[in-house]
Image 1 (cartoon, rainbow, N blue to C red):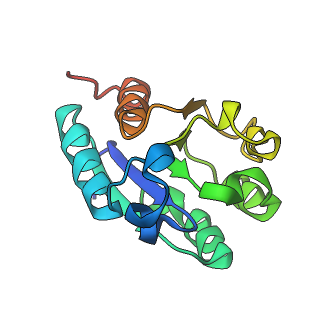
Image 2 (cartoon, rainbow, N blue to C red):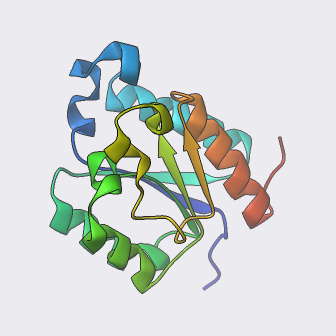
Length: 152
């Protein structure tokens, strides 16, 4: 059975379930469902089928990454604070990697020093920071180009 080669998993980590309650000056004030609705629309524009996953459990996030290559051709990962210290998640991404883009709503490069560190360095193809929701649109464009689906 042939499967399409244009599936992207969009993974959100810790505290994304309460995104709308986080500092709107930093995170934009929208809910996770609103963000995912926007991402889905942008994905359709470039011929990509998105799936979404969010958890506050580091172990569950790792488990999802272990199964990623069986369900997705690429990934967009915003692991939240785990990005900066969870070597377990970095190791899980390396187990059976797919092309991945790291995204952050806020400009982590110009926040606290610890936020500048990424355990995904060398495991992702690009890092998009500080563009709010539009960072996901940019990441989808990069993935569409990588997968050869870019049509828009």
